Length: 174
Image 1 (cartoon, rainbow, N blue to C red):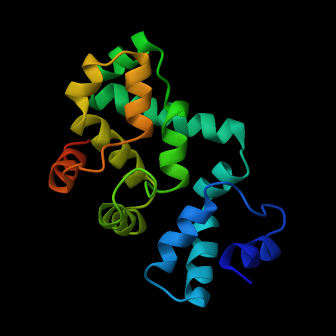
Image 2 (image 1 turned 180 degrees about the horizontal axis):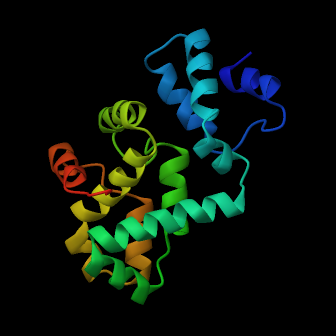
Image 3 (image 1 turned 30 degrees about the horizontal axis):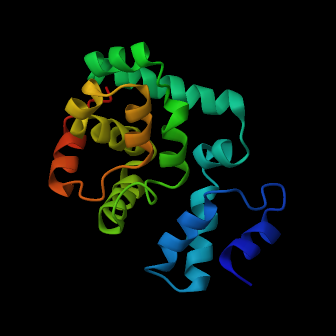
């Protein structure tokens, strides 16, 4: 049985949800199957991931509102530009969160994000998302809707890791 088959048997009320395979695959890079299952099950038990994987719309929208508040506070001009272009967090953020950035960032960078997430909790995912926006602020300010959404869904693989972590460090969550 694979990690995801075991999880679907363990938690049939959730089963398999798109995006889980990225989390399991990332854990398998560093652990054996048994330990990966344990880590995966514990990771997905959080209220944060339960809301995402059960597609609890009210809770997901609450996460989007929290993100928007942090976005408007930290990057007001870019937030305003996104409002003008009608780019909403649902168009990019959900995928970033569900996969903990494994589909958006190079594996070594995503691994460091995971380390920080495990230490700091879900707030670090918000900071990372805003750090990505800050690192690409110039490009996003000049983009139209199509280019903006496209670049958020497919981040450049050449993203400078040091620049990203410097951007994340500039994000205030208080």
